[in-house]
Amino acid sequence: MIVGKPMIIAVDFDGTCVTHEYPKIGKEIGAAPVLKWLTDNGHKIILHTMRGKLDNGKGDLDDALWWFKEHDIPLFGVNENPTQISWTQSPKPYAQLYIDDAALGCPLMLNPALSDRPFVNWARIKTELEGIFESGFVIGFTDLIGVENGSHNSARFDNSN
Image (cartoon, rainbow, N blue to C red):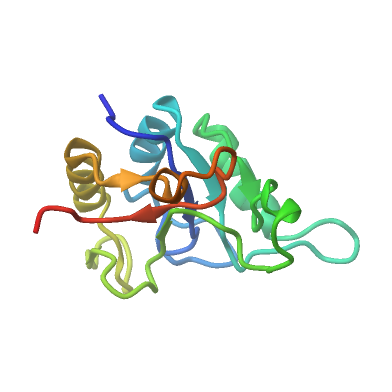
């Protein structure tokens, strides 16, 4: 069971959900069950990827979208947070958490049988998330400042000190 408020989580695709095989879809690395667990518990996933569409409307983004559909993982947004237009013009999708193989501190693993490049270690991601949810220190920023309807704002605080 997940304690606390549901989060918006931005997730990269290549090297994060699957191994690096761009423009093909890479091999499974354990992302799907964790992402499904998150969405089943009320969290919202934004696909935050460099994959895109061409002028003709087709492109490598379709393959990533197919992967999410195939794994029954609903997306809240694709390269955008659909709620943030009312409070910012920033092109960066707002999320409380970003999971990306290129992010500093993201747990990676290397398995030469799957890929010659490191990829996200989803077992460690799930352990980290369980720790965050159990500690209850993921809280909405608006809880701290007393704003009624500002679900777009949040912060992560470790109040164990």
